[in-house]
Length: 616
Image (cartoon, rainbow, N blue to C red; front, side, top):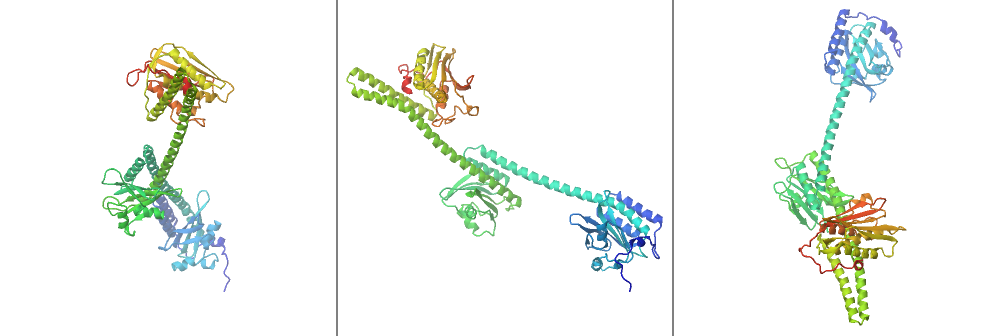
């Protein structure tokens, strides 16, 4: 028995002519090539085109069957795109496996007479297909860049074996087929990219819809200042987004209860219910800290619905706990689709889960804001009381001194004078109390009288002397208008006093400072200007300068002084404004009507302008 060669010489296999071979005429082969060319230009589907090509290859080479293996670069294998006679079997070959794998690995053609005599042949496909391979012609197929894209194998020439002419014809046909394979790959890539693009567009549309929904909720909630109104806005938005028979938001109370905001589809408005404990479906979801799907499989569904005073027994729905930073805030419920179908889709569940996160964050922010506002109000109230008590201390101290002098004074005239001064200080306290209460109520009662501006300037000077006493600040009062005006002199002096105190605090750390008050006027207005050469007011704070409880850089400031200045000016039909002093510093300007009547239309000429010194 002769020894089986490891690799039959491909050179002489390729040069020998078929033994008793049947060879198509040149015209017939040319017709087959022309038929393939026409098929390539006919825009056929890939499978149809490759089937036609392989049929023509089999016919042109007078073979039994042909197989086309495409290269899968990702898995590094060959797979059969079309195999005549293979029916529904998929054939897959690794690089280096069998003759087709050897061609893929080396990029070289092979033409053998007896496959079973070649050690590279893998008979597993024959076993699978109950077939017997004899002769084989196998060639690589390259694209225009020289990259391997396929391997074609033609099996069992019906007479003899494959010739050099067969090899040339197969190479010509497969060069044409390479165009179809590359186009198919490009088309597949294009289709894949289009599908990926479409999927990305759909996902983007979903994300945009979700963002629009969250933005709408944020906008609607932000437009309401009250927590209950914010929750109602959330419920109404959810009811529109995910139509349901009942939608509600339940909030946990500090004592372990629930406050439920509920909207039924057929009932107007939002109903608010209170429960002493965390009951029902919401209580169950909050207890387990996980979403609760409502359905027939849920145990005790009717009992849970009754606990929560549901108007009906829900058939389907979702209850999602509202949790932020591990703190249980409550639960969001969406129950029963209106109409025949009461169930919720996967998209509905996704939207509800998304909304629950937004609702939880909104509630957390609202609660933190409310707590901060309460703390700010308490702090502001404390500072305001401290400021008021500080203002009260001076007249009370002066009055106490007068009373002590009265106890040691025997002369009736002196005692009467001391008593009058004491009553004046007490009257000042009474007026200051009225001012604070009026400010708290947003009211301002004016007691106007005819005032000589020259005399008013002296009261301002006395007050400034008291404010800047013991400081290095040099002050002066310029009177440009010495006519008459009608206004509440006491309140204007108090307003100027607040401005002067702010100037003293601004200049306290400087070695020298100046404060200039100017009294001017027009036929219709009285214009009071007060300027210092301190640091001025930061630009970022200027818009809040006259707001109540707004302070900047003053540890003991109440934030009421300039707010009261603005209120006094507006009560006189005027304005209070601020501007930077040229060269540095702060300038305040009060413009009031020159003729201001009291609320009763009557003057209080009998009430003297209180001593400015007594109010400091």
